[in-house]
Length: 151
Image (tube, rainbow, N blue to C red; front, side):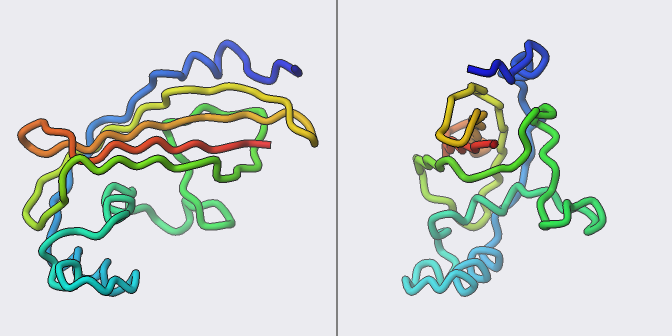
């Protein structure tokens, strides 16, 4: 192993974002359903959100000039890694309750793990971010683990 991960980088494990609260609207559900080609009437009517609706709900709205050349916003939760080419490593989503119009949802993201592995073409860094989305009663609505790979 090359030992790319410094103590400083690893010290970011457990770092958490401030809670972000958003309201779910029937119009937003309907727009998402149409944009993603949903066929079920309950989604098209906006009665309940389709799968993956929550992904965009908590994205920061930022000026275009703050995006990288490939249109990605820099995630302030993450440390500066020694490798920078990012690839998707996995997405594990658990839905605990349906998302409905009028729901106020609060998301918190936590950098839950950083580790290194040797790949065929060299060292790889993996990091995992856990997101929990809760309703105003404090009940878990969605839990999501995103894994990214850097090379």
